[in-house]
Amino acid sequence: MILAARGPVLLAPSMNVHMLANPIVQANIEGLRALGYHIIDPGVGYLACGYEGAGRLAEPPDIVAEIERAVGPRDLAGERVLVTAGPNREPIDPVRFISNRSTGKMGYAMAAAAWRRGADVVLISGPTALPPPHGVRCARVTTAAEMRDAVMREFEAATMILMAAAVADYRPARVAAQKLKKTGGPLLIECERTADILGELAPRKGDRYLVGFAAETEDVVANARRKLREKRLDMIVANDVSRAETGFEADTNAVAILDRRGRCDVPLTTKEAVADAILDRILAVRRSRRVAGESAAAPPRKVAPKRRRPR
Ligand code: CTP
Image 1 (cartoon, rainbow, N blue to C red):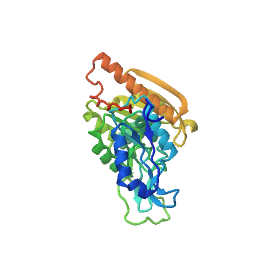
Image 2 (image 1 turned 120 degrees about the horizontal axis):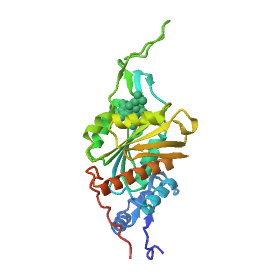
Image 3 (image 1 turned 120 degrees about the vertical axis):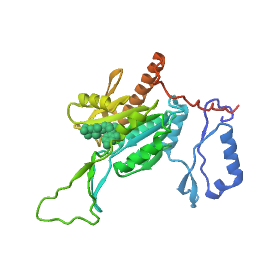
Image 4 (image 1 turned 135 degrees about the vertical axis):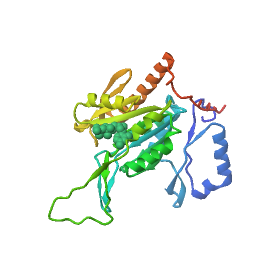
């Protein structure tokens, strides 16, 4: 059946660790890869034969993600998408920090959706409890300063930047070297501003598509529109975090997407569906810009290598 198949073929090898390491098997896998078969690499761990090592069948959700990427529209092929997600932690002393309630779910959903649609994705994540999405290169950071440095390192290569992180705006001006001891009086922590990462990117953005996220509790759209203008973004995604079903810990969201063309509302749905709606809107805006002949059209797209079909 595989020899006769005309569509993409995905193979998820799974076998004994020594069998997998055998040069004959390795040469066969590389041969299949070169012929255009898509290999889903096996995992490492306990094997059915009792050995430990490489050879575990890839996890079923990861196989599903690979299938979705292989048979999906691949409308982000050639894009290099940089996503930030999650909160920051700004240390007060060795045991305490200031943070916020972001869980990273929206940013992780954005990264997973972009990868599924064919992009190369790097995710710069603050501390979250989420596993990195399959296929996505994930860099973990803690503070806003670390997030800024990581973003600056990845920025040049990116064609699209999705800043979903809830970046800390302030950090304690001094970090105590030892654990602070309680006293009879109140504790005052003097804080200083952190760098505005998006604010720094805007003047250097060139043809990159820059998307901000505005988490608001009042005047949601008006505040987001102001940030779109002031931060000179291509797009901002506004969401009301005061409501349980669109807030930080929810698996659902409802957003208003604002850009120079106007406003597009995404009613309450899963964060995965919101992520796809945001990507759809970015592609639609860029297409219309290209039609209008604007200089800010899409960056030159690397043409995805043609899948060679087994005859
Ligand atoms: N952001 C950033 N660097 C910061 C703060 C925010 O890059 N130091 C980014 C966020 O990742 C988000 C956008 O800016 O994409 C808007 O974040 P938000 O916190 O809503 O806006 P602020 O500019 O911080 O405004 P305020 O906190 O006053 O509402």
